[in-house]
Length: 77
Image (cartoon, rainbow, N blue to C red; front, top):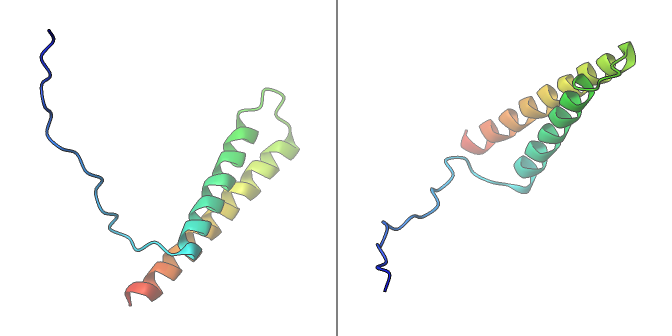
């Protein structure tokens, strides 16, 4: 018969940041924008248009992250 070795219990760590629907939405949109930017940069047939789109998406992600920080600061402040 096989012995089972009990492991220490694991629990999810509490998030240090408050979660609001607005923050969750901004986070998701920023991730999406970054994923799109990376997708465009990795294209084998990259063109000037794909580079412009990647730059626009990365800029959009930065804007969304800035909005998330501002929203977080109003919650903490």
